Structures are given as C-alpha cells and as structure tokens.
Length: 101
Image (cartoon, rainbow, N blue to C red; front, side):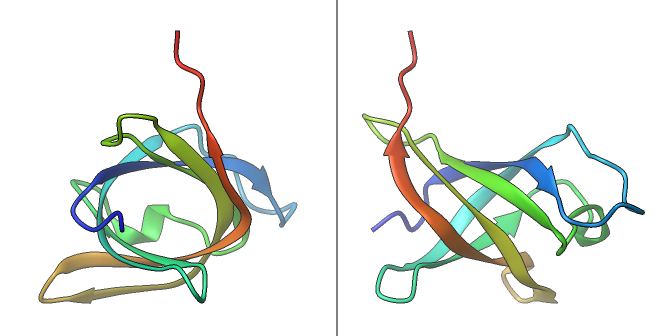
C-alpha cells in the first residue's frame, strides 16, 4: 500500500527514565507495509540504527501521499540487510490524516 513512499519518524514518548529524549526527525523509505499485522518495515536513510530507541513511542508520517497520514507505534526490531538499515515498526495507534495548511 505504501511501499516506496517516504516517511519520517519522530519520537513522541520515552518509556525509560534513563534514556534521553531525541528531537531528531528521521527520514525513511517504506520497504513493506503489512496491513493485516499492522507492521511497517522502513529503511532508515543517512542515520545509524543505534540512534533509534526500542523503548520509545514514535510517530510515523507518510509524506508521499496526496493526503498525508500518520500513525504512532514502537520499533520492534532493527537490522542491517541487503535493503539497508531496516526498522520493524509496529503500529499501535492507527492512521490519521495530517492537516497541513
């Protein structure tokens, strides 16, 4: 559904007190969207996987749509493979439209 689209990831909530809040907006490309399991696989562009915390809630904005959408969720896994730096993002709060003025 969103394969190939550009997305951004931005931290919205931190689950661990010891971790530091990150205000960086990370640019990604959507590798795969599994609608039935609410998983999105993202390729992180120009950043290190170590910068992405697994103990945080992120907002994922899909910006290549005529009506941009966003969702909230958590990173379930991070790995490097032939596609690049891959993030497994699990949607926890479904898609909603972004009103851009």
